[in-house]
Amino acid sequence: MNDTVEAQAVAPGRGLPRGRMLPVVLAASLVVCLVVMGAVVWREHERASAQERVAVARRLALHAAELRDDDPVKARDLGLAAVKIHADEQTRAGLIDTLVMWRRTDVYSLAPRGVDGVALSGDGRIALTGDTDGVGVRDLRTWLDPEVAFTDKADRLAVLKGNKKGVSALVLSFDGRTALIGGDDGTTIVWDLTDPAHPARLAILPGDPKDDFANSVRAVALTRDARIAVTADFNGNIIVWDLANPSRPVRLSITKAHRSYVRDVMLSADGRTAVTGGEDKTVIVWDLADPVRPVKRADLDLPAGFAEATAMSADGRTIVVANPDRADVWRLDDRTHPTHTAMLALPPRDMYDVALTPDGKTALMAGGSGTGFLWDLSDPARPTRLANLKGYTQEINSVALGADGRVALMTSPDRGLSVWNLADLRKIVADPVETLCGSMPGRETISEADWTRFAGDADWSDYGEDPITGNLSVCFIR
Image (cartoon, rainbow, N blue to C red; front, side, top):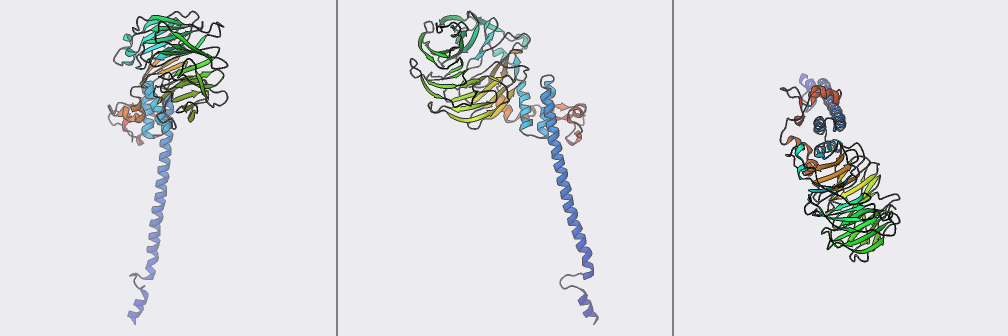
């Protein structure tokens, strides 16, 4: 009888009396609740921590941008810290811009000489600058060599003079041996720069004799071999010249290209394609296979009020057109049917000049914002931002790029001519952190005072601290 009662008190297959099961179930439920609550708390902590890191990184990146001119070293360290804490498009772009700014040298920033034009040879060594006393011829090799002390860097090699009413346009051949300098008197002077320190004037290209003011030269262009030239005037004409014998140029044709003056004229390397941009806001593609009879092939379908600056690649396949709000990329695989491939977002400021490398893969544009915008057009349908060339406080008048994109020039009324050595730009863009931390990690540090000043209330011990120096070693931020 007792055995029967005991057997009934124990649930079959359970091993515990029914009265003892409830505490076990409650304990298990409590454990599950605690695990769930712990996971929720952990996730909330991680979310809050991630949000704090984003906020700290953005704050440091902002302060780094503000300090670029006044304290570039601190700007570098804060920008690097921002990327180490939270790497996103904003923090990476800020650090890249800071590192690129270190590649800038102001050739003459204390006494600008009214620079309003610039041209560069294909190898990036010889430059023309429109100075107040003529056109300066400059050898940039010492400016691009970091081993040469600033006081030993070469100034102008020569000055090109002779334009009676001032210089209005200039161009330099790919090999740097031929220069065309257009003037407000309608004439264009051809110079031999084989010895850039001793230039020789070869000839004068006259303008349209009908109107002394209207034939003021507004733009000039040369083929790669400098055998064909195009000059464009205030009256909207383009004039094609044969410079096979530069001492005896031959005028091949005069064509009315635009209703008002021509802002820009570009020639392909072989001289078979020309593109003109006019004050009438139009951009026109020309066939110069027969330079005696230029043929209009197409108008770019541009929005109203467009085309402040235009550039074309040497192969005649890529065109970039900029206005105050944006820049557009066009392909000319068929000159009769230009194809729009992409739009580049720009700040709402005037764009005064655009430069393209001969292969059309790198574009530089600048204007009233005081910043140069450098873009990678390797894929014309998907352009990517490379860097902003910063450091100016006023507008930029003109820009130029070397053939391989390793040298950039920009001119500004308040800073004169600046040279940018972009030889390691692709490396910087690919990995700005490795650029700084790969060779000398530990060099970049932030003091506790600066951390409190720039990072706010964030506890810097969460990001790492050098126990020896008491500073935050930026390359080792965790």
